[in-house]
Image (cartoon, rainbow, N blue to C red; front, side, top):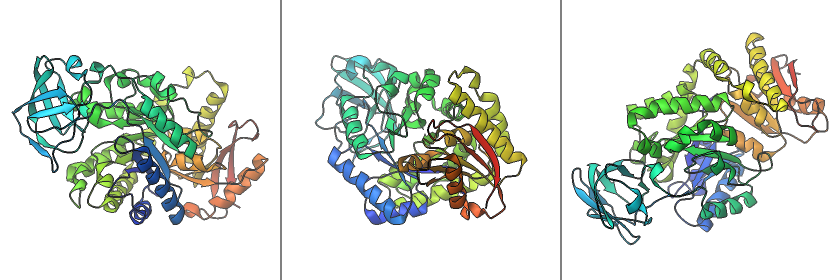
Length: 476
């Protein structure tokens, strides 16, 4: 069973129903809809097509909508793009009409005031990089140090500490209201700087509301990581913008650090940006990209994400299938025992004051230990909100994790959780009935047979919805 989950962006190359269905069958777990381009009607149409495609293939696929955030964008480049050549000087001015090889217009007038001489600037995910060499009235004079072709309306990346922009924006909150009403599963918050930005989204926690993903893409977010991880439901390591605020040599170490802190807290973490970038144009990734994906798995990522590869690439289905093949092979080599030992040293349960959360932490640790020592065939979590399942996954057990909830949205949200197969169950009045249902559904899944021992973690009282029971049972 592939343990590491796959998030894939849906765009013009992949939003038709046949392609969506094929991507799901190839291994897509969560569909990402980026809201930075297009209007609400376009995105809502994509959302509904994803839901319909998932129903047709009979798979619980989560939907993640990615808020635009306070993005600074360039005015559109010429059709076909404009070549930005290494070493040339380009003027940057405020405007929203057109950009070219000589002048780049940006839709944030204060950018001239905020940028200082010596700042590194970039387009998009950082493929094209400039350095500001002079400020002259209402113009920045920048030199191209890594050139390329400017296309469309790419983001204009400025060191995050320079910009006086708040997240979430009014536009973000408008999108939040619309998609929450539709029952969206997951919302990603862009350019988070502190826990306050996550709370400002103002939605209820799962299961009543969507899972919030905080995108760590600024220096401020790294510096306030502990509070963000505590407040958010999940985290995304957004390496594109993070590579603007930090030297590239720091990114691998930041990735490892962020992943470890998230998993220690029981939060799913997505590693994103340029994972199989060459597959936008090519049928196969580079060797370095394949290694990057595998190393993200070894680092402990809950999920890895495709962006342009599946949104505008030549073969979105092949991109998903290739990602599934690489992650599946890396999962086979994952060092479960070493990871669990490491996470036990990183856990900070002593800082948690809520007794119910402390109890869940203790029981999930015990579930992992019992499963290992008893050679159980699976860990079964009965969890209405998915919280217990996410706590179990932090130990990266070597056996399958099977989660059961009566809430369909929770089942889809667990598409982000490493090693977890989630199933919808009936609403039951007693824990005994809920456990019996789970064992009945589990039989035959992942090779479970009558007589196999499984660890079951649940709550005796479905009314209080508190995890308080650990059992070692046999499949009937």
